[in-house]
Image (cartoon, rainbow, N blue to C red):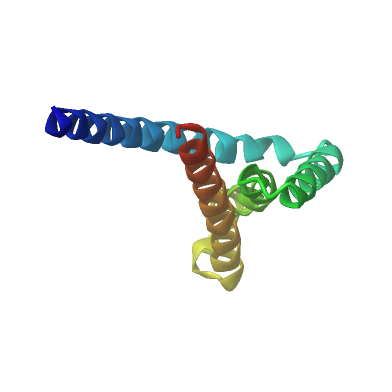
Length: 123
């Protein structure tokens, strides 16, 4: 009887981990692609809002703070993409490497924040 309960818990844990991985991947890419919204004057409102929410959530020790603080950094990927499309040979410059690095750090912050937040809420 106890062995059956352990197997059931292991299957449930495995399924929840797959679901959490899919949800984290989809939401991370969706949030990062939303960085295209920062092109234009609305960046004046988006960045401070994300930073204030992130800092407030850091004070509460929430993993969602990583999502809010990582979102403005994902603009680095948008910046690299625009530079790649507009400037010949831009992908061979240090500016491209820096923009991709900053954007990737933001994307990793979003993904790890979502992963941790979903792992806590599933328990």
